[in-house]
Image (cartoon, rainbow, N blue to C red; front, side, top):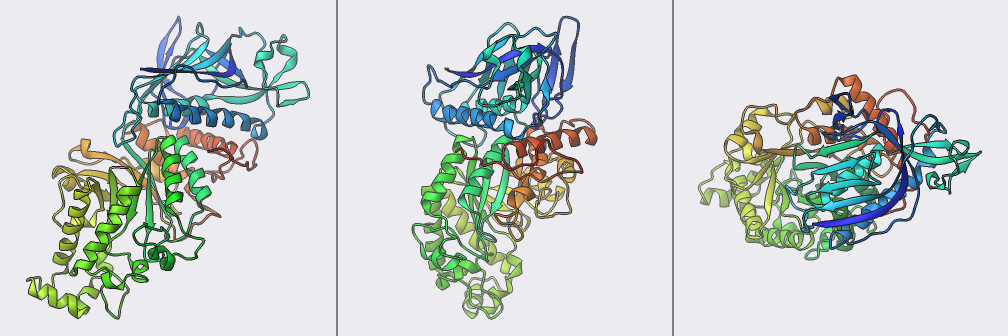
Length: 561
């Protein structure tokens, strides 16, 4: 068990109640001398489950230090730096409203104590992310306890969202300088931070182990800094998987070590290429936020960009530049090297192998005389689904030999192709209960993405929230989560963040809280709009969800990794 103590902006209690700003929502338990009741924290996205309430906190900035830490500090120290940096951003965004401590009993909290039970800092599917957050009136330390360091990260996110910024009248301070965040003063007002409803206890954990966002850097190149900023947004939403759709028919922007020519000829521009160093940066920064990075290089369809440099692995026909040719050994030599590179670069156990929409170009297989002759020799006649299965079988064997767990788009399952027992089925064709039920009944794990296509601009956050992944008949334990998908045909650096957030926050809320209905739509609408304003305060150009206004409609340079 490891303990980390950090000196925190000093905190003072005061009696009172206030809507909180945490998202997803938290299930609370309220304790005082007269009553014990349950309610939710309004404004908290990724809803925690238990809290005790009675008073409030004021905080002012102080230095940060670490004590008695072990290997976990390589994750926690950057997290605390980001946490304190985000506090320093508040005064530039917040409305200039006073926090009035009159007629209140004030007490100072002087630090955060983080206790992590496990020394294991590996990030893997199913890693425990539970945490407890405790703020007691008779304790000078805010306490976070978690099984793993990644649970502690989720606890810090919740704490950060509970903080409310305001200006404290210096006339009411009684010269207690530890209230003050001295760099920010205005007309005898002191910048301060509040947490209301203290004492407070939260016990929280996610409902699904797989909570992701898919980004598509093949249809439009996304700058590295944008991807890194988006990781901060994902962490704020307690998402834990970045599904990176690295290639498609339009471009191949990733410089694979074995085949650099794929990017040299397949990228839109020589400066629109991700190097191995770039990818390693994304992986490392994602790890520090408790986010796994799962690569996808789609095959055998969606491969026209591969054809620009490797005609030897492609079908040849007058009607299409793809798919790949499953009948030649050169194809599988190529596939082996590609997935070996992915194994060497991406540490995660999962890899997405694609496999969708082959029907769009399968006639090409029959129009290629080499392929047609091979199929006839192997008794396949004109049944291209058999050739499709032949390719997937060999591909999955390669992936299995590399000790990776494959994820496939749902067609690979729907066509009854032979797939390995550990294959995960990604259901993308809407909320396809038939496929979900069949896959789980056959023992396959499933992730859902079909409800949450962010490129469908007609869909609102409400549409995304209403999709419950467990609303099917079958083995619900095998529904392991899902991901929002931002396909890139109509997004680039100019509009990516505003298209994704906060609509993806509704997906994050559903995947964190699970089957629990967190109040009427109006209540959720209030929380998600408050959370959107918090994202704006932290420098994200998150789009509005309805008419209204955040305290300050200003952009801010993020500036911390």
